[in-house]
Image (tube, rainbow, N blue to C red):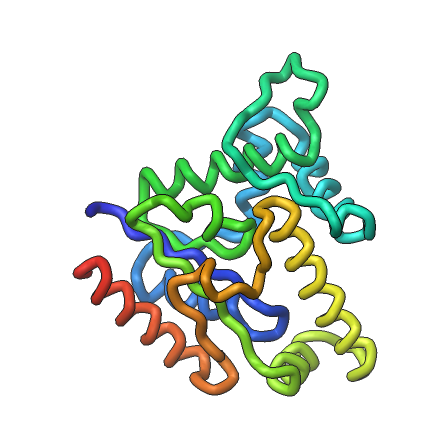
Length: 207
């Protein structure tokens, strides 16, 4: 097996993105997050702003939270009236993620990448979480807000990530069955999380 891809899903404030970047650096591989939107824009020819607007629609539209349109992989051509629909925009992101998994070892954060790559044998999926106090304390270090404002931001962001995941997968974001490994960064610390992921990958993939 030439490529190994590690996907990271994370609660806000848990340090999941930092852990992903540390892991990628340690393994000497590329790290991908929201830059997938730019890559999807370049691949499809659709304005990058539309990808961000699609995310924001799920963030703001309460009625969308009761719906799900699980990803099936179909891409619509430019002449189709649904070419810039939310589903097709997500499908182009998924195409980028699948292409990356085929051509290189890398670490991918979010974007339902664990679900998109769930049938690929070279993928290790990880969920990073921590308790409320840890997430709040860490988020407060990085933002100029009151504790009450920061707690609301954490709750809103986690709700958005949960809604985004459910809409595009039909699964629950926090369901451990969707991941190979779930780690509490508050108990382990970032370095130990990186070590645990690396150790798991070595056992599973032999490298």
